Image 1 (cartoon, rainbow, N blue to C red):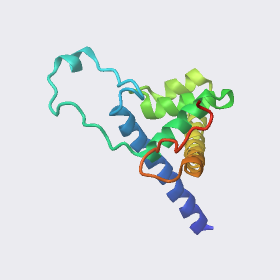
Image 2 (tube, rainbow, N blue to C red):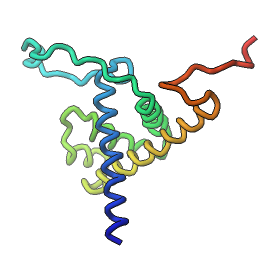
Image 3 (tube, rainbow, N blue to C red):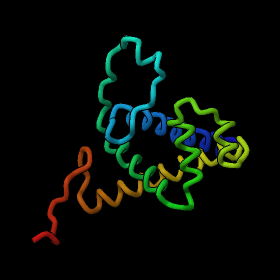
Amino acid sequence: MKSRQRNVTKAMDAVEELCWEWVRWCVTRKFYMRPPGQSILARLQPSKSGKEPNGRNDADLQYFNMAVHTLGDMPKHQDAFAAFMVYYMGEGEVVKRAADKLGVSRSTFYERVKKFAVAAQSMSVSIKRVHEKHFGAADGIAAPQSISHVK
């Protein structure tokens, strides 16, 4: 029983690490996600480190990004998507306030975040499998080999 619990905990840790890696990846790609807002004082200060460099263009993170936004477009996942985005991209939003806006308790809020993350990770694996079946495995997202419906 404890072994199973440890495996579940490890799996959840891996999913959470994937989510935080996705957040870092999104921040470096302004065309995927708008950059987080800055206060007026922060904008007046010169940058100490310069602009953050582009992250690695990881195909797995692209699949995860597709899964997150696909699930977010589904009506049955919209509340969980809202919780997920507040938790990971919330720009300092207080969880208690966000949970109140959704009309749920904090524990329910966190449960929705976890379930959405697991669903997105699972869907990203499926998207990757379908892509590789149709276009073959490659480094990054490969272009189609041939398009038969184009004249």
